Amino acid sequence: MTLYFSVVIKLLAFVMFTVMLFSPSRQLHTPTNLLLLSLAVCDFLVGLFVMPFQILLSEPCWFLGDLLCALFNLVSIFTVSASVIIMVLISVDRYVAICHPLIYPNNITERRIRISVLLSWIYSVLYSLFILIDNLNQAGSFNSCYGECVIRVNGAVDLVISFIVPISAIIILYMRVFVVAVSQARSMRSHTKVVKLRRSVNATVQRSELKAARTLGVIIAVFLMCYCPYYCVSLSGASLIVGSPSEVLVVFLIYFNSCLNPVIYAFLYPWFRKSVKLIVTLQILRPNSYAGNVI
Image (cartoon, rainbow, N blue to C red; front, top):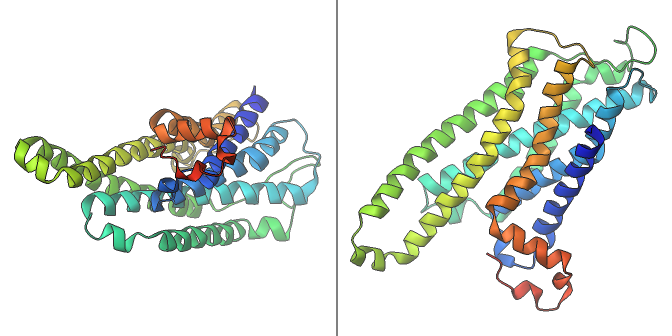
């Protein structure tokens, strides 16, 4: 069953990655979608590297050696850290788009998003190395017997840096977005028909941004539901036995989030479904495919 979900994660994340990278519509190449692309790459790495090793880790004996054990945990922490940071960047993107729409086009550009994503990935690599430095220098030193894959991390540091700080930022930003979005929705409904006609373009843009905020809000809500159980256990100070049903469940929820993201895109983004159809039917290979409007 776990292997099945691993395959699903890889396939769905790969489709999302392909759609975002090779989409026939240039209209999809926006700062927000660049963030979604980065998140899709994290999902793809989870399915390609983390889940298969997690399956092996649930077996009674780890037979791949101490070095691969440390490297597996390095990639695992890296993908989780990168995903959390991308979620924060998505929240910042929606906050500026909804709360400060006049400065959004000039301040949130594709170039700045690319730089932000690159810095987030560099930070995630450095953080993973920092949190696992002892395990990498002395691979296998925390094993009590042969055939184990045990690492030791500073749970308090990881809890604060990987959960409390970013989640607090996400919640604060989205609370502000929610308040402004409700205010804008009421304002648009209260306008007269004349005002609506005069501001039809602005109203359309506002509705588009609000819809994007709702969709990304769903992604963040699912993200919180999948990540909270693991960090709540860490916050309580309780210890999880490696390989126990409770440990497998809370860890699996984190990785299962990578499977849910592409499903959310498919249900809530019409352009995603249309782009998938163009790719599956090979219409993307046509010379004029980039001229198509899939939004």
